[in-house]
Image (cartoon, rainbow over all chains, first blue to last red; front, side, top):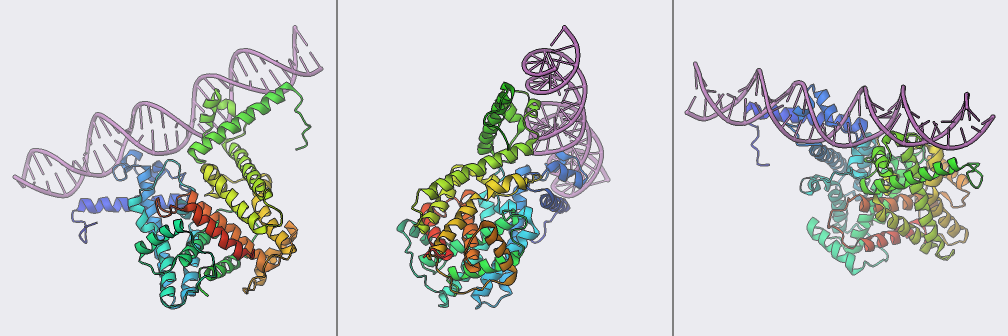
Amino acid sequence: MADPLKPQTPREQARARTIEQIIRLGREHLALHGAAALSLRAVARDLGVVSSAVYRYVESRDELLTLLLIDAYGELGDAVEAAVGSVPADDFRGRFAALANAVRKWALSEPARYALLFGSPVPGYQAPAERTTGPGTRVVIGLMGILDSAYRAGKLAAPDAAAVVPALSADLEAIRSEMDLAVPDALLARGALAWTSVFGAISFEVFGQYGADTFSARDALFQHHVDILARVAGLG
Amino acid sequence: MADPLKPQTPREQARARTIEQIIRLGREHLALHGAAALSLRAVARDLGVVSSAVYRYVESRDELLTLLLIDAYGELGDAVEAAVGSVPADDFRGRFAALANAVRKWALSEPARYALLFGSPVPGYQAPAERTTGPGTRVVIGLMGILDSAYRAGKLAAPDAAAVVPALSADLEAIRSEMDLAVPDALLARGALAWTSVFGAISFEVFGQYGADTFSARDALFQHHVDILARVAGLG
DNA sequence: ACACAACAGCGAGCAGTGCTCTTGACTTTC
DNA sequence: GAAAGTCAAGAGCACTGCTCGCTGTTGTGT
């Protein structure tokens, strides 16, 4: 992205505006009808243009899906980072809770887009890793950052037992070096558990796995889970 | 379902056979192409019949989806119960691990059907609760059964702290009476956390949320998570 | 100032989807 | 043998993604 500040020519400006508009409309359709029902023709109709014209701007339906994927990852990442940033840097537990709550809040307000990111893969669609891993890893990087800071500050309790087997240890070492972390294996593994568990709880809620009226106090349930997960991750 | 042992007339027999066949073909298509791509026309083609003929046996695409949903829940429930049953009844921890591993194994061998059960809801489709909650709750009932047995045997460690708020307590009480359990609030809540966490870990793996090569030792990672979750749930 | 090339939009068309309705044939029952 | 019930077929509607050839416009370099 070595773009100058402004796209020079008016053509490029108009083009960028149109693409922006297509993404906006796509986002609306996505939120209303879900990913599998996302239709380029419908977007074209809303854009006031014949369906084939949209292909001037977006290569295919899959390409539009990729754009929306990146868009959603970006919004989630922004929300999470803002929430985490609003908690004092030394309140690790508070930051962890803020992260989890921010993800949940966004997921509940944007269920279809959350489903696109963390639900069943869209059949026949494969997200291009080189464009999506960056935006897609912001949350887990944020989470690991909190744990790492806590560890470096001497505030991450060493877990009681459960040594990590060598095979897993290699994976963890790779993650540690890639993310520039200091936390030892056992705590890193527990961080990963906390990570997947937070999303597990949220997915159950968003995807309706809890029955219609099994849990009426869902906020309290999630709060309780986050509380325990923080402890599991070592945040006293 | 007040059906006699055999559907009497040869017509009813043939009809039942055809429906059976449709479900079988639907299951194959589901496994190969995913829920959103499940097409009645394709099933009809495989059945060697024109598309409209299928509507004699299955009310709609959604109805077929419901049949496949129940079918999948049943298979998962069977697998889980068999796995749990093969571990001594007093080895609560082993039973918990067997349950988790059975779910994971089934999920990895049937990703598309797992996605139908636990992934993003199919847009425009609402599973009829009166037909799906029964088969759909077998796993969680099995899990809670293990925890309850452990508790009644005095083998479920009381959690350290984290009192449960009244609002949540009411929900838990309803669950306890509905499932005929004895475990107290705090442990019940932890059981729920273990439940959602197991599925969170599995979903991440099945839905490709771990990058392509972040974790190569996935078995070990899951084993580790199950280990910790057992402890979280109170299984020493 | 003008010619040209790039671009944007159109509309027809292909192959696929879910679903409905009518028509004709076959089978069971009376 | 006639009436009733059942089944498959085919045509048709409205929708999907996507391609291609055709126009008119628009920005730009000479």
